[in-house]
Image 1 (cartoon, rainbow, N blue to C red):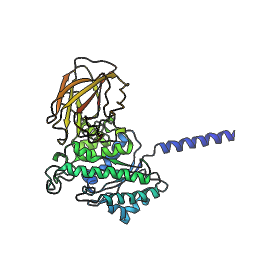
Image 2: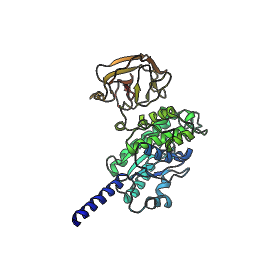
Image 3: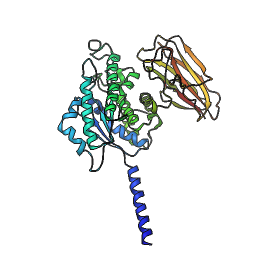
Image 4: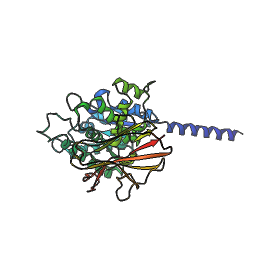
Length: 409
């Protein structure tokens, strides 16, 4: 009898320990600067978003210091010591976020080789303490249109953006080769600013630092990079409100604002984290089910009486001079088409319906359709296409948006 009781007690202790481990949130160390600290910082939004998404509450230590490049975090004794002193004994870091100042990764004003060396130093130190820790590069964003750097230092925001983006992408590959495949990923936050076309409304008055909306996009991008989840799949509680809902309310944002920004962030996630990834070029598909409303989130519910809104736009003028089309495919809900093996950026399969075409995308291609009926159990997959070369895939024929699924209810 005593042996049975002991076995039961041991089993219970093991179960409790296992549950404790399952409930352990991620430990995240952030090395950044004012781009991470503005508007109360990315840390509270990242933490609140993880909890709202059903994840155990993470522990996030933000060691960001205003005005500092990554070399400061790699060499300053206090910053280095945080790796070992920032956690309780026995715990380990899961993620270290690495962010330089905005121009640090440009070839015009920065030093990409030094950035990679400093990132390697930090990762070496972190992984000496936490061998399984992964690195997330915080791809910074170009400064807004109207900044004094244009056109004297950079021709325009796109030139600065492309330099930063190239360095961060290459750095992720270089560092992963050093520390193990997939151990370092690039969080393409700057791609979000590009999809917002470096509009000054998303920046502070200095046209360098983020407005609250761009801080939200930054935190959302980090969320997708850390957890592999989509911000669009989270609906913040604004009524109670939750911690995330309270932060939205504090900045005067509602659910429509949330979906607009979450859609931008999710569109910048790695292809494997996106619902129906397209080519990743400077194209954006936005959909809505209320007259005049659009957002980039890839999933909408359709009911009879709704007005389906579709908008395909060229971003930053990249596809302004080429023709475009809105395409669709009807399928049984839950059985989406398999990606085309020749053109995986095309999410649709035969039969493909052409909803609308345009001779050029200088102005967005927009379609508004009242829906007098519903088809229970069916969905429509919609995708935008620009008939010009893709800089991302090398396809000389066309580039595509991410596809959106419209689910009949």
